Length: 311
Image (cartoon, rainbow, N blue to C red):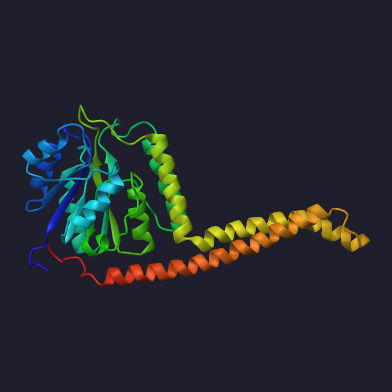
């Protein structure tokens, strides 16, 4: 590792001609020496030209979706410290030094910028409520307090980035980053950062309901992959209770009369109880696979050096 840690700022952009120059300039002023990479996600305006003129290294990602951009950027860029910030100029770039300092002094592998709105219009209608809902859901499911799961302002160590699989395609990438950090129990922290409304001429690409459902689907998928025993254990218990409710009257009647007059109900009850056992076995098997996968991820994580101790 170099004596002076390298810092890479990754800025995903789509049609941010009105904002990207200021984002690049603010980052260069806030974190001198950092290389600013603007990843243009098939913009139809002059985002690339404006970013290049502002002094950024501009690269293209033709597959639409923020997840595709982050996946590409984290694979391409090699640095000791990675800063991720949206290109819409809604985040306070002046918070970047504090976030980097927090990562280094921890030392941590993941620092999330928790948004603090500077004006009432910073959040679009429904976004703040949706963010709180998702924070609560992930906190309960994965057993770790989360205060801004959907933040697009984060700092990572190299070993976090290079052990992160990044399978998301769109805005659910933040959910994947958050759950990856929780599941692998990497040291992480949160820093309050300023959050403001978009500049004139810049429009949000987040579609409230469409992307909200994508995030919910990602949470469900991560629950299946990362908490299979809990998920299938609950389903198994539910199926067993349904089977018992259906079958108990039949058993009582058989004990009293020696007859099974409701054979279809008895057959259904037995089938549901059998399904309950099958669901539990699936959960146990998937949990074993999860442990192997997490061990492999941990080995990949430990193979890389720890974050630098000073910047």
